[in-house]
Image (cartoon, rainbow, N blue to C red; front, side, top):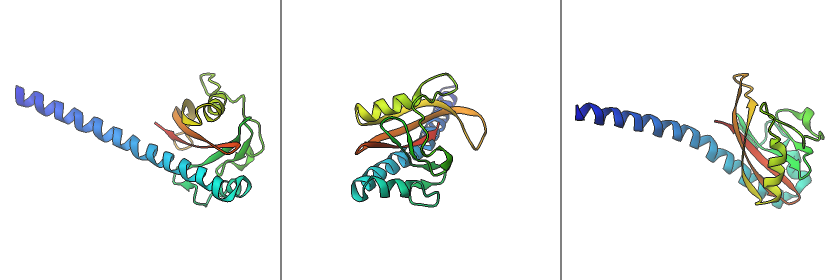
Length: 150
């Protein structure tokens, strides 16, 4: 009986480890993209960086991950997968539960300067509303971010 219990416990631990590693990889990739985006803004300036972020085939798009950029007031500067959003004020954008997640992103960027914001959003792959988390960071007078589905 002890052997069976130990085996089951080991199996559960292995599954949990694999699922956390599967989540960790995109999370780490998002953090890396945002860090590179902040450095890029510092290196080339806001205007050139924003142009690069808007390039759907550029270095700030990695598979399903991409960098977005906003003014500190919530106006979209860069969204490589949905260029129609550029120039739009999304400060009052809510998720499916009514959470003003864009306001939270703005507050996170202007307050601590960086951090994760959780909300629900439609996954373009599954077409279902899913839990999403975006890491945002202040970059000069704008903020950049990258989101992952959990």
